[in-house]
Image (cartoon, rainbow, N blue to C red; front, side, top):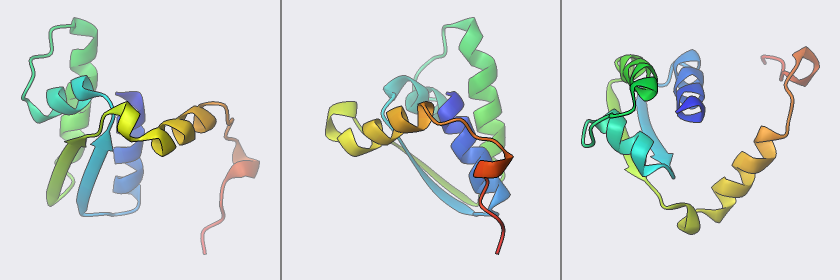
Length: 94
């Protein structure tokens, strides 16, 4: 959920109005879409927050991509989880 939320927040900051979200977690994608029940109480705040964030967009599409069909994204996610961000890593606004 946290990675999905971070991506949505970034899209809001960039003032994107139409968003296609691709994720390898069927649980996250289907719970946000409302197709699956959220049984774990600890996930409900994440689901609700993600849904609130999606109200900032005119058009939203969520897609589940199985991890074994998306090796590049999986590798990038692994690399990004090892990268620490600080002020020196920020890209200056043009």
